[in-house]
Length: 294
Ligand SMILES: [Zn+2]
Picture: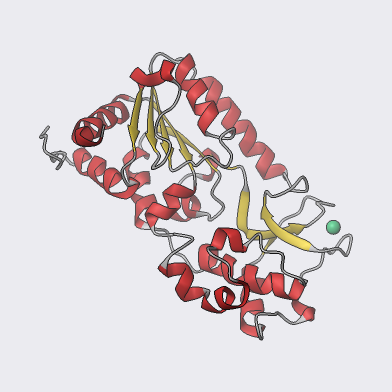
């Protein structure tokens, strides 16, 4: 599979060109390829003091660390939210992806919570962030469904943190029940599914029904195996049910899916960013740049 990269890009390009509908399913791998890596230099630079104190190994596992107090927990989360949500502009890869598909009837479902699709200018009427958004707080027990934009609170926590603790006065409390708040990211049964979430869920379901027998490309980008029931398995099923569908999958570790779909799948273990860039260059009429010319 490795040495036919150019051929697979060509297949992917033709599928995208011929598609009436483009369904994007995006996971952590897309943001990592865009530059928002949760480990390595980015983590080591921005979180050196947390690494020293807690021995945490990356930003993902650091969110699960059993911090003893709310003051310590929020000191970590504030910096994590700022680093991945408020301090990051729209990344080029997301903007390029939009350029590639913006003239089509598209829809995005993502497990990412970093708001990159929104920042890059994707239509929020064609977008379902099923797992939440770092940019909001909610009641930790979900006692009411209001979400609270957290940029100002997060910045205040960062400015006032001492010894990796925020002042007790800055620990966010639920205005209704008085209990703890949490980040609006699905981690337990208290995740708030508010009106916007439910509306987007309905739009996604409607879109899936609409494209059932249409010329469809499913772009599955960096979806890992943490929650395969959200994007990966449904995408396999949609592909299986639609003879005119093509599944274009970028997955470094698990490129192979259902064998029934093999002929309708183009799988890549290669990095997403350079591949999308090459597909965009094709749009401009240039060659594939990987051996074969168009
Ligand atoms: Zn509450």
